[in-house]
Length: 275
Image (cartoon, rainbow, N blue to C red; front, side, top):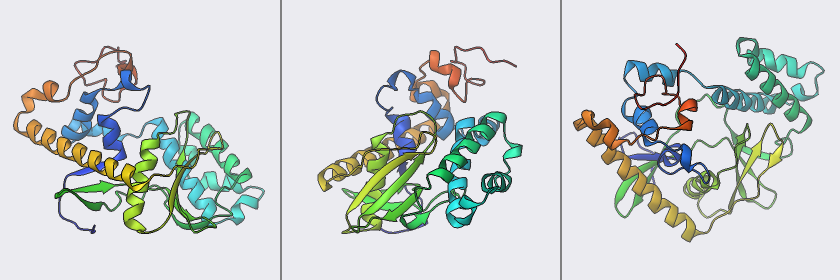
């Protein structure tokens, strides 16, 4: 394992989810979304759509920033106007009504339950640092880069390295994401005991503790290498044969089109888009 700048095939939890949907989300899965996001991202119409954060994305980012700011300035938690001051720092007045309401509630939730206050925090991201460094991994002589944007790492009282991922909304925790974090952590913290958790900043609920043995992580690494390889071949084929876009990235038109970021430009979309 090494940190390098050279180009390599890559994989991340996000890319894995674009290939393999979560349990009970199979009917919403559409490979063509991946085609727009990965293969056609430089086209003007696609780039414009990708440049706009969705409401869930804005809430996730601002929630992470709020936790970061309160951890950096813990006195803010105890100030009478602490939440209002933090809302000003986050410039919530520039956000939509929905985002303002949900982030404000998240800030109050964290003020009342500052889950990191008693933790030995090793690292905590603000969420807007940009693309993280990738881990260069070799799987049977196939080199690929694993990207794992970890929200928080802390050390438990027994010395366990704990990976913590903050969540918002009502989606179920996806254990695959935790396992990917555990795999990355074995490279960053070799020979250490490692566990992963999710914490929902809106429901204030913790996930169960997630751990994995070396056999499990080895199988995961092989699967991630496979996805990186398939993605590399898929992108290469599209660059050489762009007219086969719909064949390379199969559409799945249906109810899910209503919620797809690309429904306004996708010829396979079955929902009506207001102009």
